Picture 1: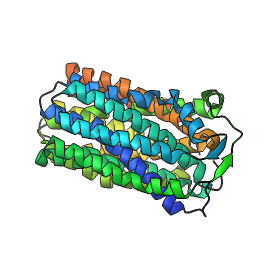
Picture 2: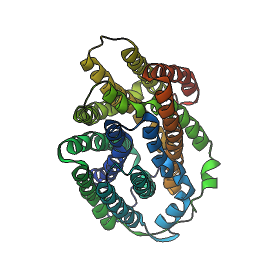
Picture 3: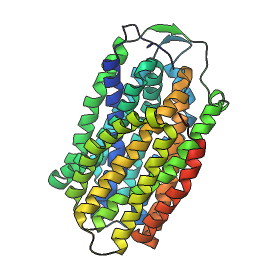
Length: 405
């Protein structure tokens, strides 16, 4: 990563982190609606778990965005000219807002139409993410890497709190249309700081390097990162797609689940991300990642026990659900994404970082579909026990490939 920002203005890390943080929050609002809020709404309306699992297909653009990331990077970073990140963000953001207005208008009862609209939104959001990641890596000086990672992970949890928490509360009290359209309006607000920053901090440059997938895959850091991403998603993330439906079936109403998601992401997730960043230096990357996996396995065993053994209080279930979906996940992912940022080449950071995220999305998508079928036909108790066992089995493999530093 470059030691100095590429802009025509003096370095302003606060302004830069605020700008990219707004985009990360916006992207996570969309993700929270899609993968946490909507599954709970569908289950509340009586959809089967295997149909809820189909929502994982919306992750397909996030899994495949590496295919068009070279085109995006070459347009964003022309051989001669200004950085075009703002143009990409503006176009993609408008598509996302329009798509959410369509989703709000058609309603959750028309599942096929909702899936199509949200897939288009996911395509636009994933393209914006390519530009945002590349812009962050190339513009943040090394001493501000921690700030950028905090914006990324913290922004993700804040966006999830809104998309998975506030969204459900709005739907429960004001209806589907009002909830979705409120989220669309919020995207406009969140994207404004980046648009102002990208337009004011831009200079004409000559660039020698041509971004490409081949250049990325030749680097051992990229191949290693892809392995770490796949293992970590399987261990930490895949089974959590069934947590919302599980809480609904356990007797919690939609507003309560939304409140848990919101409180967990807003406070526990952000706090855990900060804790993970603080622990990396004294304990090392490997220790933080493996510790988070072990804690997640313990939470999954608890969910299994709750389903199979009567008498466990619901407040305890709520507390563990918050810790699992927000705390333990954030604790590990802040270390994982900090490593990804260091492994990315600033000359084509949009491609390198995209490859890591695509592996995350691909494993999440396939795993989410399988998780839906497994939970439907095995029951929650057996499903969560199996997921916990898989997490424990993955821990040694993660320890082998993770960076010890």
